[in-house]
Length: 145
Length: 111
Image (cartoon, rainbow over all chains, first blue to last red; front, side, top):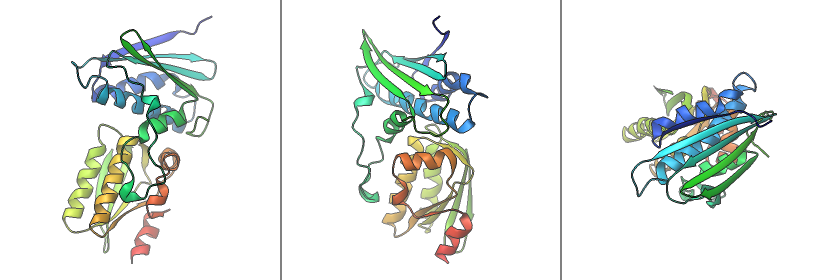
């Protein structure tokens, strides 16, 4: 039987990010240690902030849609938007060995999201960017792998 | 997130509690910039009650550290634990900062 999914769509703006993250991680509440639920929240914040900042940069502000479903120990989250085609998962990680003065301040978010999720993929479906993330709810540390 | 600033003899302690995220991270930068402008480039971020920090928070913390360093000071971290500590480890930021277990230890190092 296919697991029940729940969906929420909000404008692609910063105040929506926390609401969407809380919606997506709601099934984890009281089921996993709070640090693990917060880590999943963090991974989603990184993906959503990226969409708010870049997806609609050259067009009218649009939406972000989050669909969540639980399958055994896994929380699956699908994030989609109708912005410009962009795969954030392909973004190169910053140089993590650079000294402070040369350390770039950007690029760490996607690194964190990839580290926390057990699987992450991107597809361009018609006019939409779709990012599929899977989280192993049973883990106790932040890192997914 | 709540931010409390405490003036010590050799440093300004900035105590951050709660969640530092995309919506509020810039206020940490504002408070620290103010302290640096006021002439105290030695900052201690007391993160013992920080529950959550996302990359926008890391961005602010890095910016403050760079600003403090350019004025001859530093941003020292103390009290890191739980998820925020894991986030610093995953992004390999820890070696960039003087790090202490407690505020007392951080202050002692500057005495």
